[in-house]
Amino acid sequence: MKASSRAVVPRYGYGELPRLRALRRRATRYLLHTDINQFYPTLYTHTICWALDTKLACKAALSTPGKGNQFLGNQIDKALQGMNDGQTHGIPIGPDASLVVAEILLAAVDHELLQRGTGLVRGFRYVDDYELSFSKLSDAEQVLAELQGILASYELHLNPRKTRVEELPKPLEDTWGAELGRFSVRGPGSPVGQRNDFIALLSRALEIASSRPEESVLKYAVSRLQNERVHANGWHAFQNCILGAVSADASTIAVALGTLHQAATSGGHAVSKFPLAETFETIIDRHARRGEGSEVAWALWGALAWAIPMSSAAAHSVSTMEDDVVALLALDADARGLFPTASLNKQAWTAMANQSDVLEGEHWLLAYEANQQGWISCPAVAGDRAFFAMSQAAISFYDPSRNRPQFPVAARGFPGGSLPHYYA
Image (tube, rainbow, N blue to C red; front, side, top):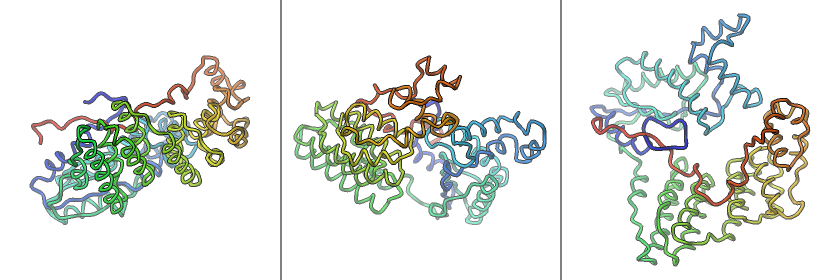
């Protein structure tokens, strides 16, 4: 298995899927492809106990004095609710703990599916994406019906837009991925040719992305250029292409920032600040009003990393968001003078931090960390034994020194193992 900063990784890496498909599709004629609709945001936390201890046992335990607190699933359920202001629907996307919870639940689904479809189920599940192969169309339809029923019992549903039964043969990997992966980019010894290749690659990626909006085409294209040594004559075109991908699809921002930093460092280039500022301003303006914290947070991280001054309009936009990570990044940027003086409105965040029960709710991170960094005072910290002890021990969840140009871990490919050669 590859070395990884993640505690939990898939058994096989994403790049191994073509080999898995070749193995599992052998001697079959039909392919069932589907995934779970909004899996992480809709996951019902009570179902973790159902998966571990059966729904019947968990329901029966509710009438006992301990109400099933002895069950590990209920303990996990309670912890998940504690991270989500007591809500029972939805878990965080990304943390290793969420990957474990997902596997607990979906492994139970897999087990039941194998029992119901004895001898019929052949294929694999990659996180919440299923690819199953069958000799008969009727078998595929039967297993699809069984899978829908099992998921419904856990209050989950298949994504109708991505559920289909197709007749084989089908490509073992996405044709666009193979095309972009094999796209030839000349080296720095041919500066004009290299510059033209950057433009051609991103142009083709944009063309594919326009017809495949549900696929991570631009993210793949940008990551494809991570290790290129860029000639000085093509650096501005390279930076413009990367930032153009971000403007077209803001979800590429993490990998784009990492690619820019890595290419600049290896080639001895300076990342131009004005194009970065334009891009960050646009992302903040567009996504803050939608409440899309991930994109805004990465834009603020980039501004901190390259010390990019931001406008009063950007400060106003982020001030309206109730996202703790966005708030902490914005407060850090303000402390460093990246926003015009007094342009960042902290009233809403200050009001949150001054609530007597804030440390028991969803905004505890903002309240505690802003107090710890000296950005906003939170009186509740001094009155809470656990948080006061953490404060006295200088425990912090936000490290301002990390806001410097570096290759973001989030921009790297999701790690995993390799399929043994004797399988495929």
